[in-house]
Length: 139
Image 1 (spheres, rainbow, N blue to C red):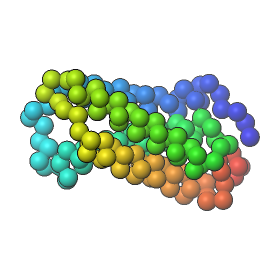
Image 2: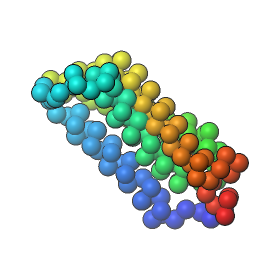
Image 3: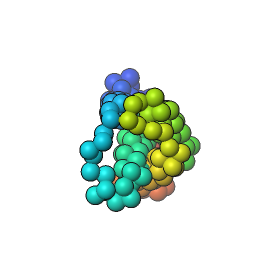
């Protein structure tokens, strides 16, 4: 098993960090005219989809950073990072004029984190097979 290079790790984490930055920027805005009523499950659906996307890229980064570790443990790390960002986002929104902090938003974030992590793991298993632990194990 080869050790991931710094470049490979940085490239793996770049989408996650950019996505987290985007969440922070959007959470800093007052969005009174956003057509939320058209979205399934309204506000909670937006939160779940937003955090499913974040979990997908965080799970990818975690899998690329530690390819020789247990995927179950890595999935837990990815969900912890994603849910932690959800907590910080809700605290942040409590201080933004026109926004509010809501525990049910955090529940939707957690549901999205579970869905996004599960999706990335399923893609990983589909690509490399259930028996392998990492892409290089099948090579």
